[in-house]
Amino acid sequence: MRMIMLGAPGAGKGTQAVKLAEKYNIPQISTGDIFRSNIKNGTELGKKAKEYIDKGMLVPDEITIGIVKDRLQQTDCKNGFILDGFPRTIPQAEYLDDALESMGVKLDVVLNIGVDDSEIIKRMSGRRVCPKCGLSYHTIFNPPKDAVNCDVCKVQVIQREDDREETVISRLKTYHSQTEPLINYYGGKGLLLTVEGRDKIDETTKAIFKALGV
Ligand code: ADP
Ligand code: AMP
Image: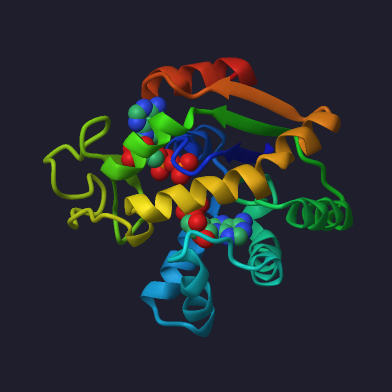
């Protein structure tokens, strides 16, 4: 299975991608997670990416495309992958088309999770993430079992710096202007599958599995 998760920031892409990756036994590739781990490790890439991420802007295409190119060449992507947060612009999508063609593979589906902006703001303000593995939690909708630490890594979950309300508002604007056009791009290719993302996490997972026939 080769798939893309589309949707506004906070729509639930990461939350659902983890479940899909487990179901299909393929890697979840989150460009946001790759940037955050580079920021944490103080790499040059991390320093550059942070300037954009903190402002709620997209990291430039040439940087983002470079990391995805390397990642898709790793052996664990041979039997499929879930791209979570990439592509986010038309040039990124066009690059991906070319890259997959040269790898001799095709996308199976682009899963679009639809959620209104007002719901997004609620989700982002309560989001907490594991600084180690990147798993997403929510203070109300999906708290860690002991309310404080990641269920898997047992380290304290934290709020992302770019989940502050001012940054969330710019990220939503960026989404509408630069990423939303991908809905038509993939719709035109007959690859789009849209799932309502307003329901609870488990209900949404069920709807996705049903739509995918698994
Ligand atoms: P994305 O990867 O699209 O940015 P996340 O998967 O990190 O979004 O989800 C954003 C926040 O919303 C997290 O705090 C997550 O726990 C919560 N969340 C995800 N899906 C739902 C849902 N269906 N209902 C309520 N909260 C959700
Ligand atoms: P995410 O974890 O997917 O919400 O991504 C966090 C931030 O990383 C985004 O707000 C962007 O600044 C940056 N980012 C992640 N993926 C991309 C991408 N495909 N293109 C450009 N910037 C990205």
